[in-house]
Image (cartoon, rainbow, N blue to C red; front, top):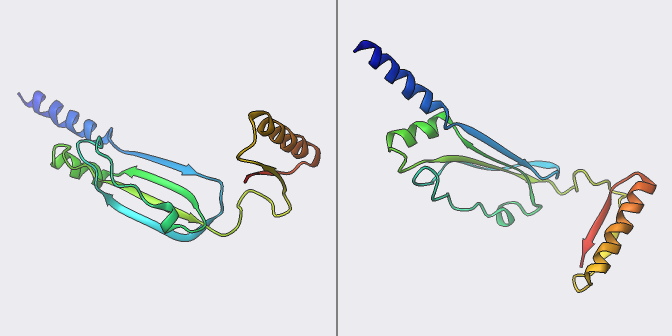
Length: 144
C-alpha cells in the first residue's frame, strides 16, 4: 500500500511540472523601458477560454518589441487547486522605442501602392532584394 502512495505522489508531482511553459516573440524592434505586465491574466478551462487581448496599439504608441507568455509554477498551482477551471497565465509586453530597431537609419525605401497589381508588388519586392544585395544593407518596403 505504501508503494502505491509513493507512486501516486510521484505521479502528481510529475503532472504538476508538465504544465509550465514560456513563449517569447521578438519583433526585432528596439525595446524601451515601458512594460505592460499582467501576472494573472484570466483564462478558463485549462486555457481553452483565453485571457482578454492586450491592446498593444493603445499601450505602446511606437509598437511592440517583445511579447512573452508564461504559465509559471504559481499559475499552474492555482490551476491545479481549481481543477483547471481558472487557469491564470503571465503576460508581459515590452513596448518598442521610437527607433526602427534592426533597420538602419540610412536604409533605402521602396514604395508599393496598395492599389497596385500582384505584378507591381512582385516587381517592388524584386527591386528591394536587388538593392539589398547590391548595397549590403536592409531595404524597407513601404505600402502606401
